[in-house]
Length: 140
Image (cartoon, rainbow, N blue to C red; front, side):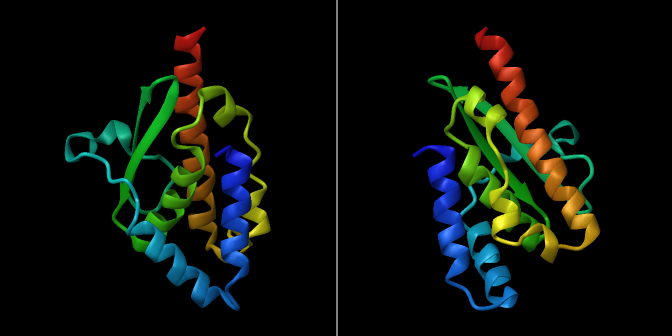
């Protein structure tokens, strides 16, 4: 699936819920499906700066696609990174770099997060795109 198709799928899923309590519960459930980072990569260098909670992200290239794994010590944050990894993992660096993240506004996520969590969300997106930029540089 393309990034856009995955984003559309997420928008559809979130539209099924009546209120934000149900959406938060769904995000918590998504966090439980997160491809977890190997313990050896839970290091200071893999922590996303700018997040109130601890969020670790690790990326590697397989067949010219970036594969992300992650974890967080907070359940909502774990759900947020799970959504982002679902969108960006197993995509080409170029597609990740060029991806529009407007789907986040469409599902209303940013407006329903505290300012510190919203900043963390921006930091997560930035970090995932930085990994993609690093891998794209290697491909060129």
